[in-house]
Image (cartoon, rainbow, N blue to C red; front, side, top):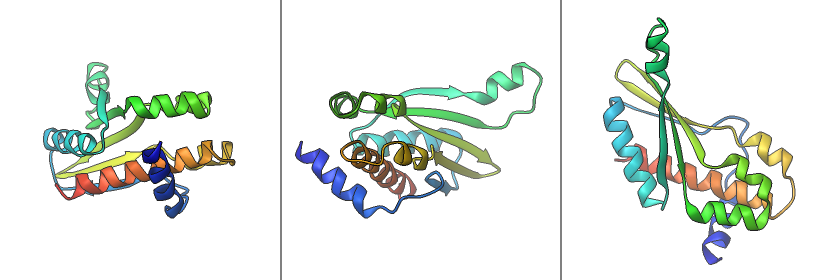
Length: 145
């Protein structure tokens, strides 16, 4: 519970954004996946699933867009959502989109703003802010690896 309170405090310090969290780094897809996995583990998050969008498109004759969708989460986030506001389970696991263009990798989260508007009151609003802050911190760690 103290961890949730700390995350909520972090979330309150994060300004609501009208766009997804986005970072870019000069690495290839394989290195980006390794770096994200390490950054996630440092925040007690795990890579739940990786969905390679590009392979499916190539099979259908389209150009390879070099896109992956990662699903990351934690058991504690699921428990908090179940106890606080079960509708928040729709946000979990958290999603990251990886897009490779040349030598640069862009990692982008979902946009939290619609969810913050949907849940304007505590404690659900604070939980979303905490998840957003945790994801921001994880992406900062990714950038510094």
